[in-house]
Length: 45
Image (cartoon, rainbow, N blue to C red; front, side, top):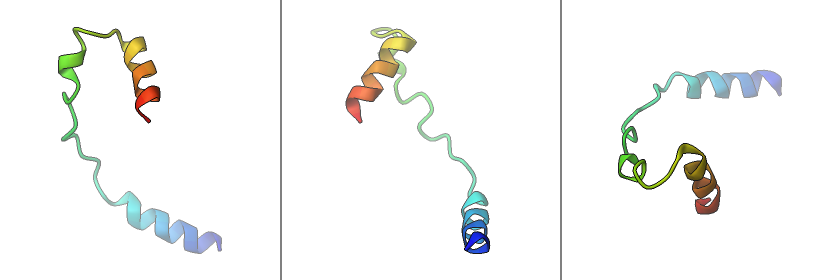
């Protein structure tokens, strides 16, 4: 069981993290503080 989970994790871990979302909320930074954005993110879930 453990080796199955480890093997699955190591396969997924090889994918590189993408930053294509970076700057996606830049228009909101004038409207909200970082704390307010954290609260909004919880509402949007």
